[in-house]
Image 1: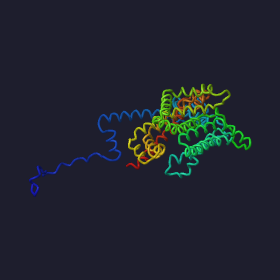
Image 2 (image 1 turned 180 degrees about the vertical axis):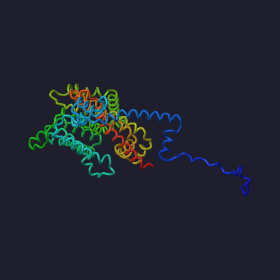
Image 3 (image 1 turned 60 degrees about the horizontal axis):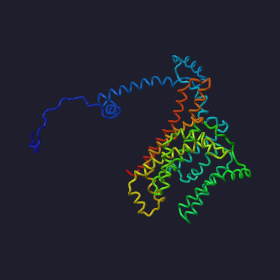
Image 4 (image 1 turned 90 degrees about the vertical axis):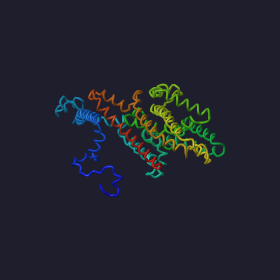
Length: 439
């Protein structure tokens, strides 16, 4: 050892080490597998056991799925086809039932020559949602169509005169005009009360006669379709979309009301939320189906789907209110004080500062509630509405398809998964987009 630092070095090797094998790869697929699947003996055993389980499941399911039975006309015909194709004991799916009944599973008993109407309604639904869901990529002028769409949607599905949705829209116009006038000249609270009362009176007592009078003068409309012909995924999507769209604003109002300093408003909101949360949805649907008409005036024809929509919306709104309240509670006190320091009134503070942050925090809970509501639409089969599950029972009652189970339920589960997974992915996209400014 020689050099200026020799006195500071404890040991220096003076012979070469023997040559060794290169280390195992730490990158690529092999490196990923070593770190994630075979990092130790216990993980290796779990990985091998999981792979074996996946293999046995796929070995049984894939041949069942890949059955050449799309042209089957009945269950017995499918079994003959499977036996001729060499599928052992005729084990395999009978997809002929899906090919024959897929239109019924989607549209129910809606008249076939009017299929264009629900298709147009759901295509326009995407157009109306685009400026709301993708506000940074779609022109904001489309929001005008989004505002008008709630009146176009039921008209396309149920048909009838065009004057009825226009009369319903007029109720909002009347309420808005009264609120603007009274809020400027009297007070905001008086404006809200009078505007809501005027709109309700218009919808309950005046809208229908005015629409009928206008229809008698200038009949414009499309063929009407009865609610009992609704069914399949069209019915589930209709109930889900309406409940989702209406429950969020109602839930926000209930959450704000529960935190209100006005004692009466607070206790009304608390009572409503706790009552709805304490009652199963099935009970509310039975109330909508059987008991609600008892409390209505004699001769009142309250549409069954409209009753279900009201009950499902109220049920979802109660849960939504608690989700939004959680977001409000998570905000630091400084945000409220900051709004006060800017001189904002209550509604300006909620609209500009408080609610955007609270909703951002609440996105996972809101989307989970939406997904739960959409899946709960299958409960309407209990009160006689023919959602996909109700239709599957009717299809299996057919002698040709008696005994078919997994094919129908598998198709229904796949369709629900597509909708729910899409909502989940959009939630994750929205969370990433809203968090960008905070990184």
